[in-house]
Length: 186
Image (cartoon, rainbow, N blue to C red; front, side):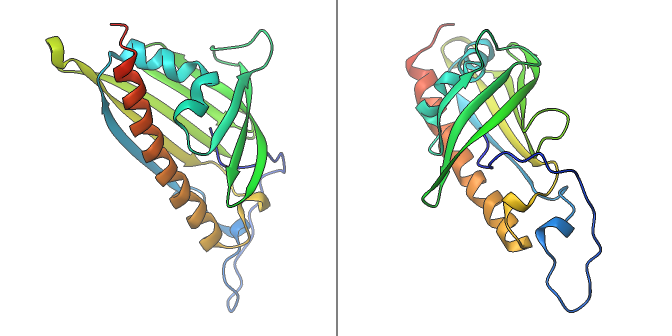
């Protein structure tokens, strides 16, 4: 789940003028990304089922709650879901669209929708180990797709958002690992 409020403004590029700090709308979104990994004591199919059931997101995410698919939706590519997010005393609801479902391999969604989204979240699952030591390496990636005024006014605002989201992702992965270990279905 993203920590960004939804926005559907069109993509724009602007030149930076010398003498003024770069504004968020002037930034190339490419470097605003991160990936975090965690070992989970459950098979990739089991972890995939937990992640693709977005209603469980609030169980491990420190910033997202009330996540649910639209009626009669999910988990499949094209399914839409909403969720409540919070940061620094503010709260908002996002709308996301699932863009990839590959059970046991990957679950990917875009906040704001596939066509004009703001952020892409990728979850990948890789089996590791044998016997009782069998589990998965779970990888969670976040990529800013475009800048938007809702992100803040400066590069520092966007960097702070990325850094906060990366810390939240680390907490999410640790809580997911604890939950998955307690609910092994493999």
